[in-house]
Each structure stands twice: as C-alpha cells, then as structure tokens.
Length: 342
Image (cartoon, rainbow, N blue to C red):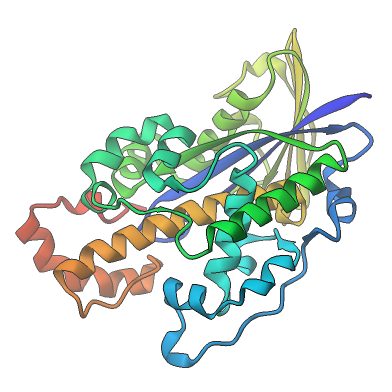
C-alpha cells in the first residue's frame, strides 16, 4: 500500500490577553488515496463532525466542570466522539466534558491516562519545563487528567477513536506542542515583533520537526492572521532555494519544499478545521489552554475567593487585571508573567 504522511497544525489562545498561546502539530499516516477532506466520511459513525445532543443543567450549576461531570449520564458513553472545530466542541453546558473526552481520546493514541497535566505538557513541549516550575499558578497546579470525565469514559472514547482509525489504516504517530505562557510569549514577541509572525514561525518550525527525514509529507494549516503569502516565513525555517510557490489566494496558499531527501507540501487554507486532522490539533490546543486557565483562575481565587474567573479575552482581562493589581504587588509577581504585550 502507498502511504503518505500528513501534518496538521492549529492554535488556541491567539486572541486573548491572559493565558497561554498553545500551538499543536499532529503527524498522521494514511493510504495515499484518502486525502484529509474524506476522513470524516470514512470515520463515521464512530466519529462525528456534527454537534452532539447537549445536556441541560440548572442555571446555578452551569460553567463548573465538576457540576457538568455530575450532570452527565454514564450511558452517554455510547454516543459518537465529537471531533470538530474546538470552539464549537467547547460550548454549551457539556462543553468541558466534550472537549476533554475528545482531547484525551486523541492524545490517548500515544499517551496513557490518568496522567498529571504538567507531565503531559513536559512531554509535548520539553521547552516548557522551566515555566511550569517558576510560574506560580502552573507550579501550584497538581491536578491529574481527566479533570471532569470518568476514567472509563476516556478509555471508551480512546478505543472508539483507535478502532475508527485502524479500520481505515489511519494512524496518529506524533503530537508536538508549543506552550507559551505570557512571560514566554512576551520574550518571543520582542524577537518577532508581530504576533502573526510569531505564530507563523513557531507553527512552521513544529511542522519541520515532525516531517519525516525521507519521503513526502503534506502540511495542513489554517490561515495565520488572514495572511495569504507565506514564502518569506517558510524561508526562515527552510532554505529559500528549496521553496516553490504553487498558488496564493484568499482561499488557499500552497507551497512545495523540495529538499534532496524529502518533499513537503504546505497548504494554508481558510477554515482548515473542516478537516478532521486539523480539528484534532485544534482540540488538543484548546484543551491544554483551558486546563491552564483553570490553574490560573484557581490560583488567583485562593487569594481572592470572590474574584470572578476569566477566559482571558481583552475586555474581561482588563477587569481581571484591575482586580488582581494589589495582589501582584503583594506577591511580587511581575506583570509580564500575567499579561501579554500583544
């Protein structure tokens, strides 16, 4: 059988002021005759791109991961695994459980759960190790995964995905991440200047690391900040002499990297999360970020219990930063550890 490697990338946390930016790249192998646009149809009915039926909870319980977990019925384990754009999966009353179930099923193809969250991040991004130790809310976070789902539910979801992939000769081979808390983000933004340039460079570097040393690979990615031209950014990661521009448009931008031992085709397209493999990377990024935001909110609420949690987006971030300002000074935490420069 003729095989091809696919690398899918996506991020979570590009827009917020607080919390980490997380970029994920996943490496897949599949028969050549099955391009990413047909994977959803082949993985059905075990895997769905359509929303699952949501469980309604009382108003006073919504938003709490523990309450959501208690409100879900164990019989729902038989429902298909929802792997789609992470913003859609992480929505509504069952958002936490749907996101965790999908993320740990994907990561469960390589890792085993239960697993300490910090341990998982260290394996996915070894460069994040020092930040996990010196950033107070990450250093203090000792929770194990899963957070809200039952262990049996994760095992079932992992097996469901394994069976669906194996039935089509698909395989997830590697997952790598760039985990950027605010302080690490700020250091890199001083180097790159623009947030979109930082995103492009780190994404392309992840893809370069995952691409096999010999043979052919296809890289699939959403557009970065609406950009249509990527040759210059590819030239910071690969030799410029190896880059061939195939097309550049609002819908799709394509490039070939022609090296002696391998060829890599990059495809940047709008709404790339419509592909299963990109959606899977999106899910992993979103989950890692949201767990980090749990650590962030838990830490500050220990010092100020009445503090309303934040998702980190600009308007609410201003409110949150004002409320914790006295604590920053009291605890001696530099603002650059908390707030991004851009």
